[in-house]
Amino acid sequence: MSWENNVRRVIPYVAGEQPKNKNVIKLNTNECPYPPAPGVEDKKRELDCGDLRLYPDTDASTLRSELARYYGVRDEQIFIGVGSDDVISMSFMTFFNGRAPILFPDVTYSFYDVWAKLYRIPYEQIPLKEDWHIDPSDYKKENGGIIFPNPNAPTGLLESLDTVESIIAANKDVVVIVDEAYIDFCGKSALPLIEKYDNLLVVQTFSKSRAMAGLRVGFAIGNEKLIKYLNDVKFSFNSYTMNRPAQVLGVEAVRDDAYFKDICGRIINTREWVKKELTRLNFSFPDSSANFIFAMHKNKPAKEIFTALREREIYVRYWNKPRIDNYLRITIGTDDEMKALINALEEISIS
Ligand code: PMP
Image (tube, rainbow, N blue to C red; front, side, top):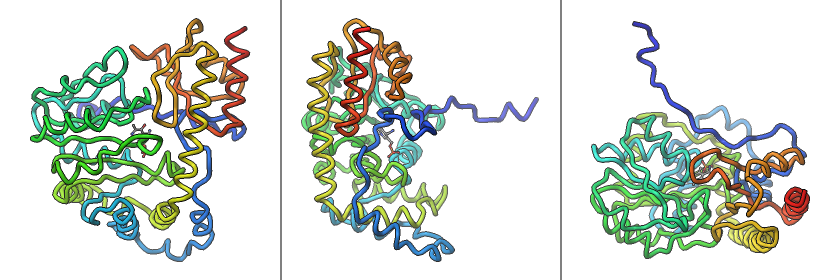
C-alpha cells in the first residue's frame, strides 16, 4: 500500500503554447489580436493598488450588474467565474451528478472529457456528422446532461437556434449547457431561450471577443435557481476566485459596446478574406462563424504545414487525434498577420 494508491490521477488538458518570444505571429489559441477597450487601459492606470490589501467582492457584484444590464437579465441570473473554463468546470461539478452519461460531440472543446474524468462523470462522445454538424436526433436518448459549444470548436461551425432549441426541448430533465465562447463572431445566442427553459445555461467569455484572455473573466446566464446552485458549489470551493483588478477592468470592457462591435466586425471581415485566400491555396474548411478557421490542405499533410509555419515563427494549432489529424486550427489575427500567414502558406505548399 502506498499513498499513491489514493491519488486522483488525471491526464490534464493541454493548453495551446504560449511562446516566450514576443515576435512570433500567434494564431494558436484564439485570442483577440486587438487590445481591450480603451477604457480598460485608462482604468488600469487608475487602479488603486492600496485596494489589493482587501479581499475582493465574492460576488463580483458590480461586474455582474453591468453584465445584467447589457444582456437584459436580472443580476441573480448571472454567475461569474475566472474565465469560462472555471464556469464550465463548476457547472460540471454542480449539474452533472446523475448515473446516465453526459453527452457532447466527439470533435469539440478538448477540456470536456478532462473535466468529466476529473469529476468521475460518465460521458459519451457523440460523433458529429460527416459535414461536422450536430445531428440533434443523436441527443434524444437518456443522459445525465449535455454540453456543446456553439459555434463548435475547433470546427468553427454554427448550429441554428432551431437546432439548439430542439436539443434543449428534448432534454428538459437534465441541464443543457451551451458554450458560447465564440458566439460574438456571427452567431445567434441561445440567451433568449433562458426564459423558456429553466434547464438551459449559456456560458460566455471575455477571452475572445472582448480581448481579455489574460484577465480571466467568464460568465454563465440562466434561470435563477441554476445560478443559485452554481454559487452554492462555488462558495463551498473557494469564495474569492476573481481578483479585484479583473472585476474593475471587466466592467469597463462591457461599457464600451461600440469598441466591442468594432473589433468583432474587423475580425469577421478578416476571416472572410482569409477564407477566400485559403480556398485559392487549395485548403478546404467548414464555414467558420468563429474567430478561427479549421482548415485542411488538398495535398500537404497538416503536420508538415504546422512544422513549416512554426519554423517561420507562425504558431497555429494542430492535434494528433482521430478525425482531425489532418487539420490546422488557425486563429484570425490582424490583417497584417494574416497576410504574413498567407505568404508563408504560399511558400510552403508550393515547395
Ligand atoms: N470554451 C471553448 C469552446 C473554448 O474554445 C475555450 C477556449 N479555450 C473556452 C471555453 C475557455 O475559455 P476561457 O476560459 O478563456 O474563457
